[in-house]
Length: 323
Ligand code: ADP
Ligand code: MG
Image 1 (cartoon, rainbow, N blue to C red):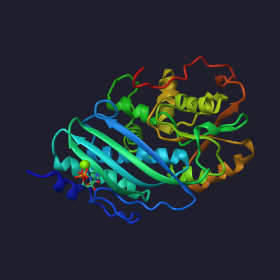
Image 2: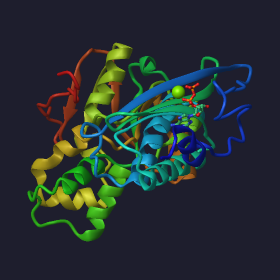
Image 3: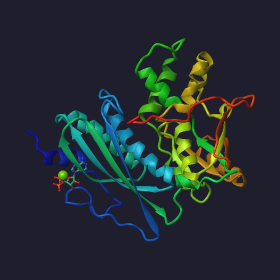
Image 4: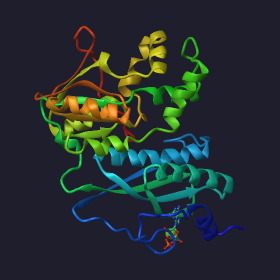
């Protein structure tokens, strides 16, 4: 019978080069640099609710790390450390091996040390706490959008939601996607790329930022609410991947994927119109599409406009776990 301590030693001890003391003691010891604020965020992933229990363990581990890194990105923080709380129905060593591999790989790609956690028997649940640093006063808060700002979004929208649909295999897309488009969308769902470099580069340029986890309108809505402003968003400008374009060409009724599709983990941010050229240049330097999708307005109204400039009647509500 493998003990809890064997499991910890086998699967949770990794090199932690940027940490005074990692896994193994009662606490980890972290050295925070002076002049920096500590940014902290926790995410809870419950099987059957946030992910399918059948998800490949390596990809699941990767995603658990990626969604937390994405919160750091959305704050303009440099991710440094994570802890992992894991509740497991039974000890399944191949699963643990694969999960911790995916988790560690994603963290390592972003210079983030896995410094501790807790492991217990129970329903499959993954709780990650991430800590990072941001120079005092420079965090990209949701509340800092200003009337007149441009609204930007990175990458493309709706791919992950389409990927989820493909996995759930509702045969409603006609004709069915090519194998490559299907794989692309599922990859976007299961292995999102946290926009950490973008978040860091936006310090000093962007006002407010958020990562798109619940859908563009819902997440932008949080920024507008926190900042006490409104917005005008242009539907035609919302960035779409070739796979999504092909899907929408056949299924125009699915335009909601762009507006409400969650799980893309792109950044939505605002910045004054004067710095638009610098932001374009930043996108080129990072090799990441940055698209101006609208503008922040002073009235507390939210408008989505179609190609003819007509308002589209739509809800800005996102998914609510208790709704
Ligand atoms: P304690 O009894 O003090 O809570 P544990 O026996 O739970 O200590 O954990 C021993 C060490 O193993 C601690 O350093 C803890 O951070 C680490 N650890 C336990 N579970 C995990 C995990 N899932 N990921 C990383 N480290 C873990
Ligand atoms: Mg413990």
